[in-house]
Image (tube, rainbow, N blue to C red; front, side, top):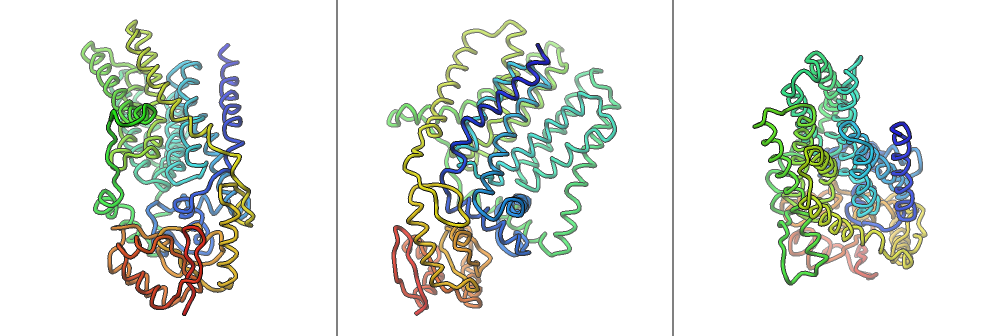
Amino acid sequence: MNRIAAWLYPLLLVLVCLVVGWPRFRSGIDLRDEGVLAYGAERVMQGQLPNRDFASLQPPLSFYTAAVMYKLCGTSLLSLRLLGFAIYLALPLLIYGIARTMLGPLLSLAAALPATVVGIPYFHFVPYASWQGATAAAAAVFLYLRAMRSGGGPAGGLPAGLMTAAAVLSRHDQGFYVALSIVAYTLALKCAGPLVPKATLARVFAWWSAGLVLGFLPWAVYWWIEGALPAMFQQLVVYFVTTYVKTNAVPFPRFSPELPAARNAIVGLFYLPPVVGILAAFWLWRQVRRRLYALREANITFMLVWAGLFYCQVLGRSDNFHLLLTLAPFYILGACLWEAAWSSGVAGASFAVAAAGALAGFLVLTKPVFLRDEGTQEQAPLARAGVRFQGAAGLATFVRRVQEHAPADRSILCLPYQPMLYFLCQRRNPTRWNYLWPGDQTAADHRTLVEEAMHDPPAVVVITDESELGRFAPVVLNYVQADYRKTAEIGHLSIYLPK
């Protein structure tokens, strides 16, 4: 039976992913964040370095991964969606694989199934750096657990270290969290007694450390030689500590009788992970007091640390998208708690109520995925698209008009935050900023942007909201209005041409 389950349940997960994802992975478009990834990868293909040659809030690896997809499948949004679909297939399988090192096949399947709907489908299957990092982190955990379970073997922890480095280079906070979690797991196993020999612990951890250094150090040396490291530190560390928490923060949601029931159910999901974490911590405290700390307790300790650290992503920006990034470890932690409670005879009405509440919230979250109106979406008649979305024909008309006014050897400037237009119009950005956001750039940055634009004068300027741009970047708007005239408006997009 176990041999059948070993193949049947993963195949079932793949089947569910195909049913849910294949009709939808080419739907929708995001002119903002998807555009950052799409056009950033193109700039990488042109030889530019992230952070040094263009500003980025994400580490460089996600741009390189997208650039590889362009090389393999062509420069288009469809290539990115294929990468997103691969991530979508991989993450449930990794969750199942991690859970199987701790649990039986049925509970492992239960832990993995939510990821087939709740997650990257909400992001139109776009392989954002956050999803690349989350997948690399899950792969690192899976490989590390497998290495410990198999006794290490030659270089047993090396692949896990390499994937941890990939997580750091894709999404640095996620990589840092998973690295801390692996350290915590190793210490927990050491405290669990002789179940895992100390020699195995030392060998696997040493190879993991070597893989982490081997995966990270060559990139660091290369970026240091190329002069990119100072900009990376400024944008990826200093900016997040000093600016991001002020300009991009979203307050933690609260229940309200004025909100519809569906919205309150989603609000409840923000509180469910801490509740699961508190239950896990209480159970561990109970076991420690009873001097019952063995492999099961070490596993739950690890999952609690990983889940808790991943939940930090939602504390600063408490929106649905950041919540979904945190849930994969909680799926496994919840399944581990259920197994522990069931085997100790304490599972009862409270767990049933909690499961019913989680299921209700899950169904509310899945509603937008399954009820998304696919019928009103059109295939975009653009060479670099390959996706369908509402208003595709209108956007294609806009792109062609921009291309008519801007020859292929001229730049365009899209303000404040529409980097997808550079990608679809196949025209370069004359500045290092692919986006502007209130408070993210300083007045000096705005003046530098104007200087860069004047050095490489754009043939077309596109503005989406003049009043908003004038409020937080008046120097930029004054430059545009002084040297350009508005010639057309298409929807919310205004086209400016030189006077």
